[in-house]
Length: 460
Image (cartoon, rainbow, N blue to C red; front, top):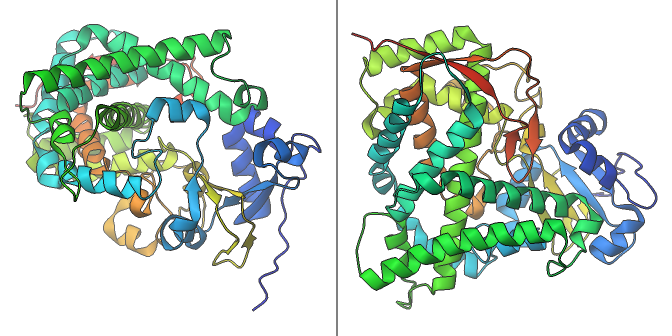
């Protein structure tokens, strides 16, 4: 079989390749490339490839075929290593998000029992309790930045479920520290200057990043040390991390617990918060979907707060959350590096050292799998519709052995919070805003989303 396939793609700049386009508008650029050039697009790095990869002619490959994506994430996943810039490794350490096998496999096996469905269900009460506390603050007729509100709410939830602690006074400072980290990591991905500027240099960005990292470290290490010293056994994820044992009976070091706790702390609230913010934005633009949502909530809940037992019954609510993550996937791109030469199912040869881009934001908008892809349509996630789509046409939580371990937690949280809030408040988009996504480590709404709250009467 002849695997030599000629690829088309942007020519790029002789020196910087496609890096200027990445920095200017990575989502628009990759979406445009997929539309113009097809399922595999070669994105040259130009002469800068010598700095990035140590060789001239280096390139990235944008994949749009579900079969090719499945090949990289599942079938030949051992050949494709995650690509992380120094700032990301500084934040996440050797947690599940950044580690490679055999450490990744060992840590995942130790942590897996903490994420069984029956264990996740025990956190539903905390999710609803924190939401009801937010209701006491929200006032009828006021305007809020729903992106910021969802970030604060999910952060309060993860603090309670992860650490059994209420950090309401520190929420604003911690979210600011997370935002600083996201901007710094993103800049290193898109700027050669930022990538090759040593972190120890006292630049303004480095100093700000260092302070934010120290604040996050101090918060998490204080919790770890306090729990170890107290000997307290709580029904939270921190206790499970401290008590987890590998096959030889060894527990995690404080550094390992810190890395995993940091990963859960950041990924466990930021992704769901962004998914919820986009959900409220989309609902505000589609009253027919909101009307059907309220009808389901009336039928299933009849005015009471939802519980874990209701998640399976809130079918349309779940479809709304899935469709919001299709259009605005919080984790909008996965990047891998080929350790050895490989051949994709499409027949394209991938040279050793090449970077592989699998962009959920792009693939989720492919009209072959999602007709009229820019339309918000939760009906796409009826079981019969899902069965017709190939695997990895939709992959908001990744895939393979690296699929997000917190997916059950995030999905339950998204459905419960959507249900709880929608039957208490209607959100109306404030006029005059331009709502656009900002692709940092996660896909946030740039400048937030201002919405007017209208308190709803409890159904009788």
